[in-house]
Image (cartoon, rainbow, N blue to C red; front, top):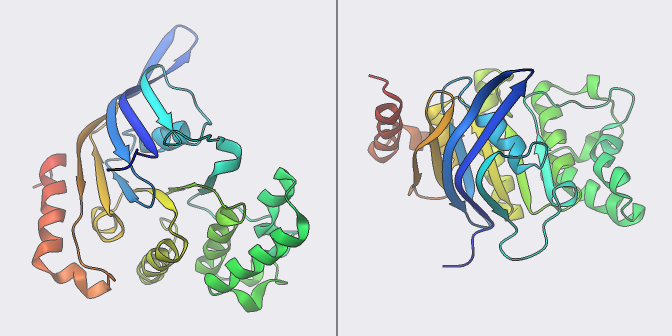
Length: 253
C-alpha cells in the first residue's frame, strides 16, 4: 500500500474565546490515499466543517498529528481546492473569469490557465457559458462553475463542504452523478462533507462517520459498490447495508 496523502492520528481542535474553551474535534484518526473520494457524514455541529478547515490549512489543530503530502511537498494555498455550499461566484466577473480567480491569485501563467479553465468548463458542461455572468446561470450550473474554479490550479486535494445542500432534490441527484464523473476524469482526491447518509454512501469510496460534537471518529470504512454508479444503485441491498451501518453508528433507528 502506498503512503497515504493524508494521515490523521487523534486529531483535536479547541476553540478559545476569552476564558472559555469549546472542544470542536476530540479524536479523529484516519488515512486518506491519493484518488480517494471520502465522505464525511455526521449530525449538525459535530465538527465536520472544522475538520475540513484544518485540512485546508485555515485552522490549526491543538492535539494529535496531521501529515499531508504523502512524503512530498504540500502547500495548502497551492495544493487545495475548495467548494462551498453556496457557489460564491463574483457577480461582476464572467463565469470564465470566476473560474480563473485562483490562477490569478497564485500568479499562474495566464495563457495556460485560460486553456485549462476552458477545458474544465467543457468538462463540467458549461462550455457555452464562459462569457455569461453568474445571474444568468441556474444554481446547479453555478455550482458546476465553482467546481471548475476549485480545479483550475490543479490541486492535489479538493475539499467540498455541503456542496449540493442548497440545491433542490432532483438537481442534487444530477450533481451527484456529475461529481462522480468529474472525480473519475480528474483522478483527484476529494473529501466531501454531507449531512445526507445516502449521498455519503453514493459518492464515497470511503466513508468517515463522526459522532455528535465534539467530533469523534465512530468508523471509517470502504464502500465497495460497483462502478460506474447510477442512481438505481440506491435501491440495491448492498447500498442499503451501508446506509444501515451508518444509521447504527449514529444511533438512528
